[in-house]
Image 1 (cartoon, rainbow, N blue to C red):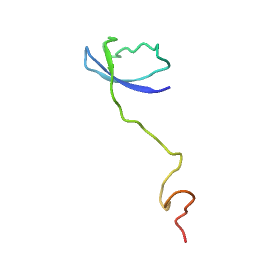
Image 2: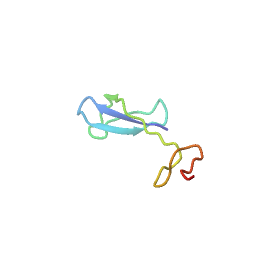
Image 3: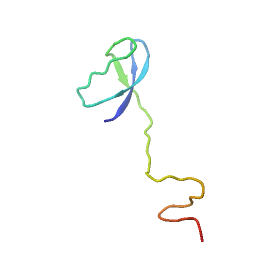
Length: 65
């Protein structure tokens, strides 16, 4: 379930909304207007690996030897 960012055209409030399906009603939490537009937002991605102190390289590389 994606989270989208919206901007209200009535009160100019910017907010995020968890969208369950395409029929989800999007309403500004400040003024309750449904006259909103979806904003272009940056995506976030994680690789599942953590890179911390002492970690060098990838693909099984330990950085030693």
